[in-house]
Image (cartoon, rainbow, N blue to C red; front, side):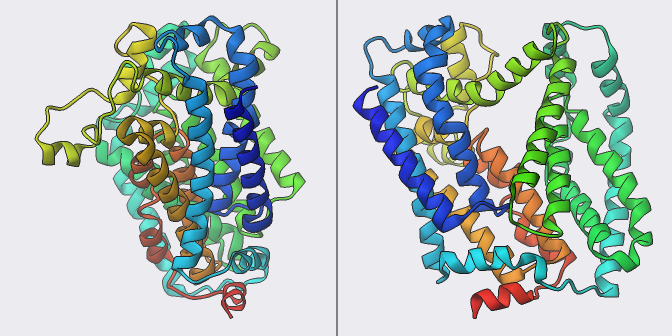
Length: 446
């Protein structure tokens, strides 16, 4: 292994120690971001670039776009810098809000002991919001033909290529605002209703009927995207809400349950999306490849294509910067990178926020965006866990924030802020629960 590989290993060990000792393993947003970064882009990155990738033809095809260039060494350094800067962003948020990591961990540990206060106003407000969401969502079931699309995609005798074409043509809604609400606000209200059902034992009856209808509509909307991930992630978010109603800590049993749910869900959706797969073992290999290898393969595609084939965009891909500079609209980077390595315009390569940060602003982007990602998720942890404490609104906001973290690990940070909902979670929490501190949060801040 090269010197850059050993540097990456050393960085991974240091950031891993920071994660375990300072942040801790929990369902907090900062823990989820750092933990998933280490999971997907730690040892799995080394396995892809040193073992799995070199045995494939596509790996060599990717590197052929930048002959003689130290692409892997550059990516080693960029990932090491990314991990370091995310950890720095977490610490900067703690310093900005004048809290210590131990206080956040104490609040996480004491989460389950914090009392949940129920007021009639809170219950009525949530009920009205749930009914309002149902009224807004129902027309889109007909406008988008969601039931017909889902039925055809899941039951029609189509090949994998035909299903890809069908998803590109019919997946999701043509109404952008509906798609945004589905991934953020409608999901948040569903999680709030689920948290209320779990926590308010004496007053469940009022929430059950609207909760079931809303759950069906949100799940149908996610399934109508015709993608494998959204519906499975929604189920995982619901499971996380049930867990967060009791605790934020993750033990072996909870982790095993979530992993089993994710594995079963993605394997089932893989059989649906790729019906040509022959047997369970082949499907599991495909899920492993798509989950752990493709995310690193995509990064390699970006760093091989940029700047050796495509120039750094220096922000021109961002609409507001492009408008200020009065530049002509350019195709998205994920399309351009896909065309470089596949010679077909239309094939996409999507990666986590590091890829877009590199494509837009080179090393400066790697540093600033990584620090920003760590700062944002830690600031949300402080605002939600420490300052708001355990409540229905906080639990639902945390679940939406977890989706935002997942979005950041698949697309750009700006997409995670908007489509992933990270920019909205505090406002959402205020709609359901008034700002009050739990016992655990007050004790942690004392």
